[in-house]
Length: 108
Image (cartoon, rainbow, N blue to C red; front, side):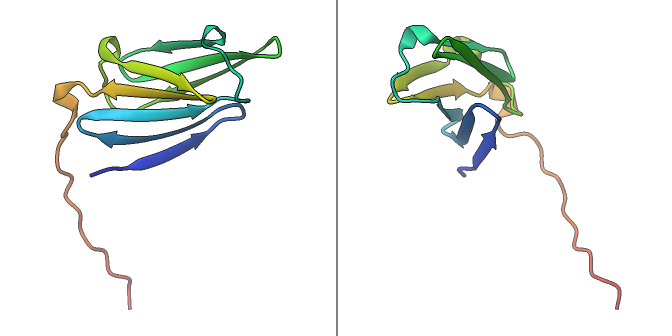
C-alpha cells in the first residue's frame, strides 16, 4: 500500500509516501538555483530537518515522520530545487498492530 501525505510549513513543503519498507520524502526548496552547499539535512530516528540558504536568509523546517527510521542508511539527492530522501523504516516498526474497527449507526 502506498500512502501519500503533504505537509506545508510557512517555508517548505514536503510530500511523502511509504514504498518497499522505506519512506520517500520530497521537499521543494524555494527557487530552482539552490546549490548543494546551501542545503543542510539533519535526521534522527523519527524525523529530519532541512535548512536552505537563499539570498543570505536561512529557511528551515523540521518534519516528524510518525515511524521509527534508520537515519544511518538514508539517501538524499538534490535536483531542480527538490530534495529527495529515501529513508529506510526500522524493521520492528514496519507493520505495527491491527486496530479493530466497529460500525456506529446513527440513532433513529
